[in-house]
Length: 592
Image 1 (cartoon, helix red, strand yellow):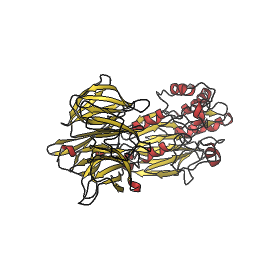
Image 2 (cartoon, helix red, strand yellow):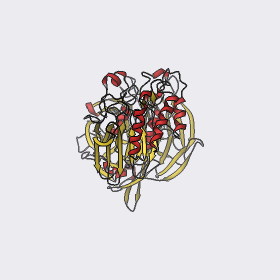
Image 3 (cartoon, helix red, strand yellow):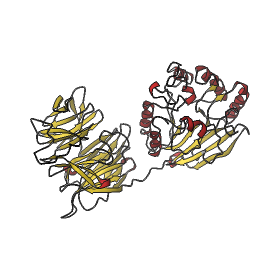
Image 4 (cartoon, one colour):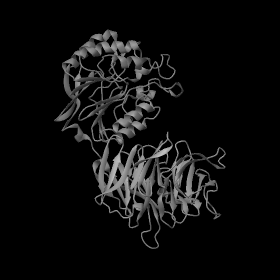
């Protein structure tokens, strides 16, 4: 497959002849697809329907299929306080090129093309009408699509490059104007995190700078992604005197990036690059490597299962079997106080500003930011803001509307603090098929796992639970569901995200099912606990690594991100019991 990639398609009526010649160069290259990277039309027309139509007349001359994207100048009349009616450009653009959406994906058997488009900015947060801006909706859609075919190489096309690509910028133009990178005034780092943590993104083409391909930093390599700058065809718009487009050749033997020189009128290797082998050999899946970071001694007794709750990437709650709930920070080896003194907690959850606890037939909440959140004397079970239930509270989970779900006996209740935070109120309930040993919430979704291993999914519309299957352990986070089950004496670890399902075996014997725990880390990565050992797994790559946590038994673990976070998780907290008489339990932090 041969693709011609065009940089900013600025036009000048006096130079229409140069543009026609460039289209002849492209037609002579015999492309299967042409990808123009935005900014269509001449001065006075760019950013309007007239500019799009002016550019289209030339683009069609090459005689190959087109898949363009919109650039920053295409949106400048509509962004922020722009007078052109919102949606004018997008509507004409979609009809002109027969597209359903300005951004999107082209799927092929062995690779994928991703297209991001510039969108309108809101008037109340527009700092530069020419920013290469993408809405959260677009970014989230692209991020979700990346997960659908793990291991399949992706080539990205954007008007401006992401921050962190290291491509040569134009300081007096784009850096000064704060529009050098994708979403520069809003959230540029999300694109950096995207390519840094997505090994499938192997190539990324952008334009915007009007610079040619001979500069040392017109091609860069960061975190497994090759970034390529794309020049311009027009004589009036080049910033270094050269007029160039990119050629991408993909075949079964390899991939090449070449230059289509519109002055020499030939294909050259200037600023080029080649790789022998299919594109998927460029997908550098990092080897799973759990790395110990730091630890702190916490309390005098081991943590209860599910007793770890992350408050942030640096701070964690550790609820122990002797009835305390310690707030600890491993990185400074500090334990700052306890939220609870009394019977050991059966469950603990963080939701918003509150830490919720359940013990016996009581459940309560404490403001986790208050300087008075810690128990300073032994007056009985804390917190004092609590409610008494008819049966023992066995599980808690954060509710998406605030407060928590509380499972007690055969009933599920939605409990919240009242407006003045002086009391608790039950505002909803549902029946449980059988008592819950654990509640697992992932956004709007909720599951109940019984002590007998039966997993039920909550149907919010019917306000009832539906039986799913038998498992030994279950977790869900950021759309990734993970479970443990046994088959022929083996522990099998399963991960699915609704598009793909992967299974691998865990090299551990089944001891007590109450010891088993799985924690989803996203992207089919899992932390599993069995027989007092912790294992990190990349289920989609069949990798399982035992973590060297020391001589003490692993009691429980959790993600090392804020409890309400749905970003990528690269770290975990692990609670390890006493290694020997006289030693103390540890809260360890690991990166995975």
